[in-house]
Image 1 (cartoon, rainbow, N blue to C red):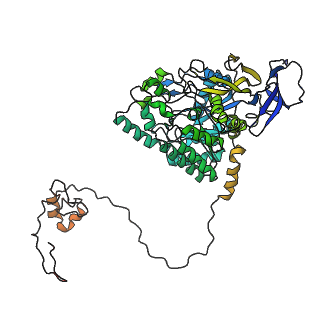
Image 2: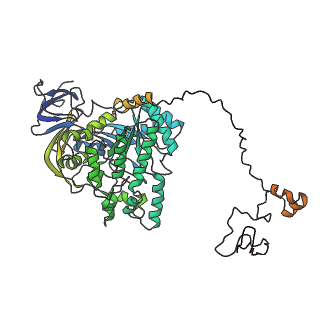
Length: 579
């Protein structure tokens, strides 16, 4: 192949920013790989030169949570793998990890193949896949092993929500975590208490609350934090690393932070929407606006939640930002216009994720440029075992590079974004921090802040991910050696042992076909207890049951009683009790 300016790129004069350091350096790219980083690197002739003076040169973003072409309540999301990955590139994201969602009882391996067929011919950037475990059984375990060992899937998602559809029980969750640890794959959890969500949903609908606000009211944040705590506790019992996706509330974020301080191997992923807006919009008088903000777990109405989650993210208590991009147009959301539980859940974010985090995190002073790179790219590359080919600018890394202008600003709007959805939850937000150039697979695919886009449908690549990631499992392996239970060595007990009568199984009396008269004449009153008749049928008062009735009538009024007598001087002293 002839080397031309299209596959040779020389980025000059920029500030190269990785998660651990920033340096003034040039970057040379050839054939999709970073060949050199430094001030005095040798660059062959014929390379395209990009002037990056005054700009940042950062690793391409990695979005670990997208849902392109996903079905919900009978409709399919409007961002398919072509439109979705194209919008991602414009926003500075060069790799997305989508999620395979099998139907209940469907083979995980077959569902994975369906997703590959949908994506391979459309993606314009690199992509990978998580696989959801929506039911449990031996076939699921076998499919997980196949996908992990042969197909390059090293992360599996389970739901504690969606009762009677995808939700796993605690015992199934225990088995799932055990199997993940044995396979060396990362267990991901959508944390909401599905049983209580179902009850709260019925309650809200019963109260006549049918609009989008009912969605938030039916999923209070304690149901998210409880499920997160429960998942972390169960995973810890089997020494399994865990990743909580869609962290949307203050309390759930605090649960993860506390668990990490205790030493649990747990990762937390807030979303761009959860960091950039809030759930108060679900009370908007305009149904379209309210419904557009419906997602799950819901955006929280407390306006302090985004700041709190950003603090946790900046301080290392949460690790990665996903978009959870699930986009449904207004007419699709309208399938739930009379019942909030039928509104397809999801919001946009794949295009705006990086700019929103720069504005809310870096411009606000909560995090520096290195932490920004960590939470938008590097940490995902490390946790999902793609580092350092992804998530870093260094010699030998994949040439997924963004030229970032920290001073340029843009105002987000559905009128100008590249996604197919007709609404944007960040509408009107002005963000400083804009990708000027996006380089993916060593080619300039976006320039002039996305006004020029060079993409070819299907040109993206599948990225397999090996299991047993050291970044995730190193501590797990060390603890396995320490956590093996051992019996206590002691002298055998040689004392007396009480005679214990074995417990007899409970015998259920078989109902007799004889009448009461037949029983008394054939077997005698002494055998009534063997007849199968109830105490009341035998004319005996059952003292285990209360005889009190609000009606004044008692259950044993038909049983003759002796006349009450006042005993005035019983043995032991006087009394006025009536017997």
